[in-house]
Length: 151
Image (cartoon, rainbow, N blue to C red; front, side, top):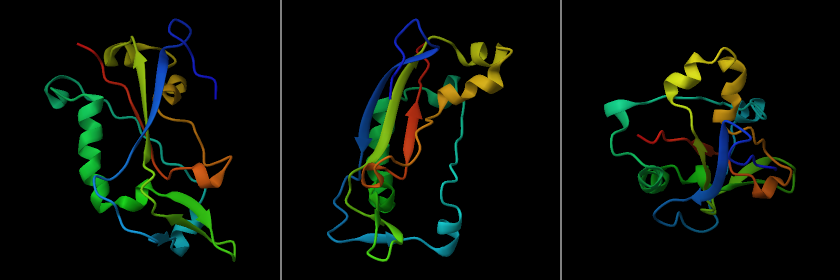
């Protein structure tokens, strides 16, 4: 994956890390998929949320990660990795590897993004386009991409 450098793209200087639960989930824990889960395979949910002003006052990427430690204590299967059983049925090995957290920089403000004429086609820069694979065992079920506007 080639990541853009400052000055060549509106979003640049990507940093990848993993965020896992604050406590170990235990050993040999798995999450089996339901029939609906399997029917929805390869359907990715992507969302872009804008917050500014008092709504995010004091929030940093580090603070978001700290909060996720507690969240993942309850939803630890989101920190596992995809595997296949001997029969070929996929499941999540709850091994606490962590959800992928992507940080990036952007020089545009929220108002600047929304004023751009081609905003709808450019919103894909604000959310991860990574898909599951190429190695299933290295693919996290959850990717979060954060861009905090510096004020």
